[in-house]
Amino acid sequence: MKRATRSNSLTDRLAALGDGLRLRMLRVLEREELSVGELARVVQLPQSTVSRHLRMLSDGQWLGSRTEGTSTLYRLMLDDLPIECRSLWLTVRDQMGETAELNQDLRRLQAVLDERRADTQAFFGRVAGEWDSVRNELFGDRVTLQAMLPLIPSHWIVADLGCGTGNAAELLAPCVQKVIAIDQSEPMLAAARKRLSAFRNVDFVAGDLEKLPVPDASVDAAVCVLVLHHIGDPGKVCGEMARILKPGGVALVVDMIQHDRAVYKHTMGHRWLGFGVPEMIRLFGSAGLENARFQVLPSDTGAKGPGLFACTATAPKHHERR
Image 1 (tube, rainbow, N blue to C red):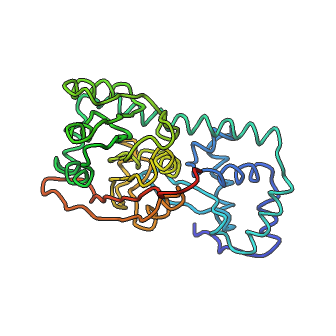
Image 2 (tube, rainbow, N blue to C red):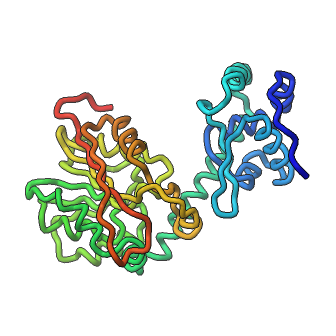
């Protein structure tokens, strides 16, 4: 059956907001993009019920959606709302305030997001022993070397964020004073320790990249190679890179150019389908880093994955820490 044409009348907009469940759903979806199943777990109702309300909200232009594999993801983006909907939503949201029910929804939302992260960590636990072959099949075996060529000053202390099995650290260790290899996956760190056992200038640290266990202004460079697309909040990682850099220090991100291979989210725990030039410049700029430069890397003839880029930026030589 053909869906009825959307109506933009005031009464229709008010009708869409005239249900407590739909208001709860909008509050949650303003915070995070969710699938039907994830939202159903947050509001603790059957998926069929949630789907019915999502359809009404979508028809009323309250939500945006996109397809990812077999799932549809929904989000309330304030800046994308029609102006009449935006002003109405801001008024209604302010009137709702903070309630016990909302706080319960947010606690369940956090549990759903934690499960997402657990899924990503489970993937790395499964493939730690064969990660190099997985990565080389996707991107080729020269990508890390190409990206690291600018980072050779011998006196540098370099933080390798999401070091994995030590691919980047292995190239850096002979060239710099010290490498701090950081990863939240213990199987990955174990593989890196074994791989880099001959080096005495590599410190292995277990830690969350969104809250690095590294002091402020303590490293000359922070590198993040093929990791940012796994992170729930890339902005936090860029902010942490800025925090730990010495004045004038260099941040380097190597990752995938924006692509449409949504299957990677299901098979390899990817959170983002690559990054574009404006997005990386915005992420670094919001973190307080300067002089962002984005360079597309040459493709390896044997690589099967998306194209890659290297993006660098520097910490101001004289600045206040955020």
